[in-house]
Image (cartoon, rainbow, N blue to C red; front, side, top):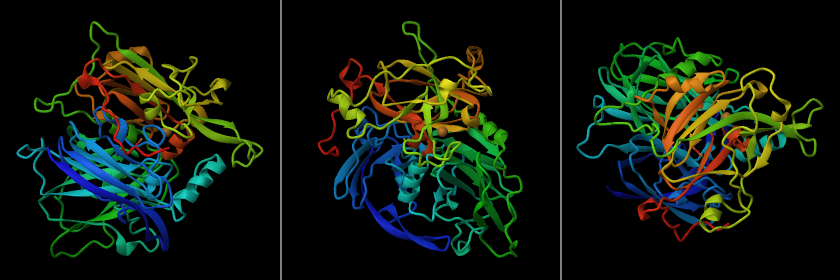
Amino acid sequence: ANVHHYKFRIKEASFTKLCETKNILTVNGQFPGPTLRLRQGDTILVDVYNRAQENITVHWHGVKQPRYPWSDGPEFVTQCPIRPGTKFTQRIVLSDEIGSLWWHAHSEWSRATVHGLLIVYPNRGVNYPFPQPHAEVPLVLGEWWKTDIKEVFSEFLRRGADPIVSDAFLINGQPGDFYNCSKPDTFNLEVDQGKTYLVRMVNAAMNNILFFGIANHKITVVGSDGAYTKPLKRDHIAISPGQTIDFLLEANQEPNHYYIGANVFGTPPRTTTTAILKYRGNYTQFSPPIFPNNLPIFNDTNASFNFTKSLKSLASKEHPINVPKGNSNKKMTKLFFTLSVNTIPCENNNCDLGPQNGTLRLKASVNNISFVNPPKFNILEAYYNNINGVYGDNFPSKPPFKYNYTGDNLPLELWTPELGTEVKVIEYDSEVELVFQSTSLLGGIDHPMHLHGYSFYVVGLGLGTYNASEAKYYNLDDPPLVNTITVPRRGWAAIRFKANNPGVWFMHCHFERHVSWGMGMAFIIKDGKLPEQKMLPPPKDMPLC
Ligand code: C2O
Ligand code: CU
């Protein structure tokens, strides 16, 4: 395993899109940010220099950071922000991650422009479990506001309602042919007929699941979230914020120009974001390029649900899985978390929501607790140094009362969540089963739930209200191993993991508006008894609070 050094200079740079120019926060002036290429088990040392006017932290999404949460990044959970003019060196040790992951800022809404891919290759001499591709193509899906992102964020907080709608989604930084002033910059993917390409894709958009497809071409998914999957051949796929998908693209059509398209799912339709698949060579090109003819539309719940449900672990001899199945001497820790969007009264009646305009603001919660960052310190350092008063350890294992979570008449007590900074403490090496239940409060919506420090097996996924008999139908043979699971609207997901990575680990919805409203919590996984089961000490240069 090798050690790689990187310098991340967080600084402003000016970019022009949709006929307008603005300054955005970047790493080294690049947008999307640099792609890091590593091998399994490598170590990365990243010097993060904050040369901007605002606080920042950087998170390594999907990297487990064994026994070392100090480099994980979520502000006020595992560290205090890196202040302007200061530097923090993050040490990231890879373990079993393979394929595409990504990194992104984890302070307020700065991840909108501070993000990039992190690709982990098999070790030298080790092949992919699929045909060797001729080339690989990084594909970063993003989201763009013409307005400064800090303004979008502060307006969003004031309004207490949904943020202003973004102006475009992006493929590798470009909105595509159907947006003003964008056509000359549309991303072109050039291919040779007869060759196969490995596309490494992340959805780095802030608030939306996206449908993605390529005209006349199939997509063969071979990996997701840093683990291999069984090959899954589709006309189109759905990808949630936070998720990474590796797929093979066979350039097996007539040489020509074909649109690559991304459409929003779950919120009102928007203009399709496009890139172009261009075959090399001489031919008369279609004008305009062929459009994907069956890209699902914004309310096609089945298309999204079916795709998520079809993903399976490779689970081969070379790539075995290890699903917790309960062992005789210890009971499995069972957790049941409801996910809701709620409302609370608006303090000075200047919100944009409520019957009299301005009387309510939106919040979101897990088990009816809306997560609040500790204002001046962080949970990890408070835990490690035994500092009281920063967080509570009473996060409930189940919702405060039972009800029909996906029914139409929800109990009134649900509407107003409690605000709090509560963690759930788990003993080292426990087997954990966690059921996420998406409630129908305010209509209900999908939630891409992400856990730091772990990958987990998705053993069950369904619509409606979870009931204990679902366990009979769990997939324990080849459940996907992921770090983000899209819990369907008015549905549930059951996940399992073994709590063998001690530390403080954030768990939250990867829709930025939802986590800002409080749809998150943190786990504290305790140290084990042996020295190699304990958290490592912090680095000397942890940012000061
Ligand atoms: Cu990619 Cu806590 O997030
Ligand atoms: Cu959510």
